Image (cartoon, rainbow, N blue to C red; front, side):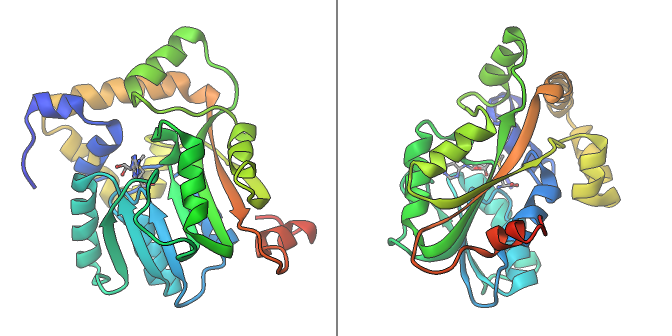
Length: 276
Ligand SMILES: C[S@@+](CC[C@H](N)C(=O)[O-])C[C@H]1O[C@@H](n2cnc3c(N)ncnc32)[C@H](O)[C@@H]1O
């Protein structure tokens, strides 16, 4: 992969920088939120799954390798797709995970093409979230599930902190509360909407060790220390995240596309008192 100049690196989104530094799990709830999705989704061998905003391909790889699904992984960013391609090739899953460049706001797929759709930390980057979610629901088959994991404010931060977060951490990123994510899905006609809160754990020592393991964490720190521009950007990002973390949370929003069949498994579990 081409070595970017300091000027180019300064313009990168923090998540692209994390990918360059070798981080595989780039979402607020880390592997905890992904396992929450896996428990609710009840993937089955041969299902057609779409992972939108796949980043470096980690979740797509897990869905294909652990559950035997056919996965299509989409990302808008060619650099992310390049990392994903290398990771998928390295684990020998190129026949089960298909990569495609695409925008969640205009997905290059037919109506009802997928049984289950996963989205982790992506919808919040789009300008018109209602359009993005309508588009996701369009490509889900009737009776299929959508699982979306996104940031939420659990309480409002002070105005100056919110301004720094909104304008400098990931300019253009926008999210509010759990209820607002539920409403966005409700407005598309999705049913059985269920929100599962997950603690924010991105770049915390606990989150790093859990998500990347000891070797991955040491490798990440080693790379982050290898260039001055990495050190300054990562230290700045961690400082802002530490300040904002008391106000931040994340959520998995599960929903089902209506058909006339029985309620989804994750709702039956809830009714039986056997929550995720
Ligand atoms: C925070 S990263 C999450 C990556 C991955 N889902 C994960 O959890 O590790 C956000 C990802 O969404 C992608 N993305 C941003 N806007 C997008 C859009 N409009 N359509 C598709 N992907 C998008 C970014 O390129 C990036 O890979």
